[in-house]
Length: 367
Ligand SMILES: [Zn+2]
Image (cartoon, rainbow, N blue to C red):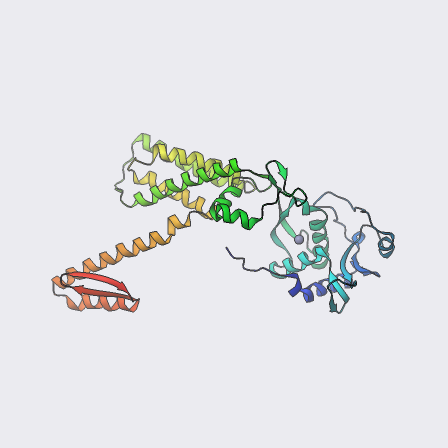
């Protein structure tokens, strides 16, 4: 799925400069020889996200001398030979890392927004500094209501890192396993826990995905041919309630901090239950309840759209609808109601469908 907005730092330098100027004017930033710095002592909530207090890191003496406090961080770095730079009102140079995120997120989402995500390794100092900058500029608290921090990806139990040489680029993974399996695989973990990528767990995911997909297909394909006369015996009422229970548990697990690991477990258990108790029952209510449950799951995972609304289904539906219309029109013709049968043909032609009468048979084609 494409992003609505996918901003790049290099096209937002003016906004970054405005942000920094505003911080200087409000007294939160000051100019040094090498950089413009954020004055952490001016901001009372520093450390609210990470619990980390103003941290001193290893720095060269010339930088320490340039700053008011050793823990102040750079908003703008003045031009250095061989580095890219922009000529701006606050001087020639380039933005610091943290200010980029504060500027672009606030520009498009406003001075306060609901969710900010990122890897767990970014909590400190990156996100802590983003908060300090943004709350100072916009005078909001909190700037972000919920932080979602993702667990690391591990490969066969080891952290994925360049130095270990065990990196799997996302594109390679997608090419090998496909988008749907990748999505379902990541969704079978909780976002905060580490994902341990190994062949065995991927194969298990593939199997689960196929199992759920084929169950949904059966439900979708069979539901329309079922008799809707309403009668449920006690046993079927029990099954129906159990299905509603699975649905409730599934939704609750998503409501509980997006616990997709738990949701996936429930989805699998429900699928087992549906295969044992619903498929083959020829009972519309049970199929329809299962259908609804899977439809909710489909929207949450962003999967199985093709089964619910896919090309195949739509083409099939168009075919059925057109044959119904052709039958009615032929009835009208038999009764010599040419006025109405011609109107049907004209109306269909307006939406790009041509009816061709061949003897006593009528066929359609798209024009
Ligand atoms: Zn960021």
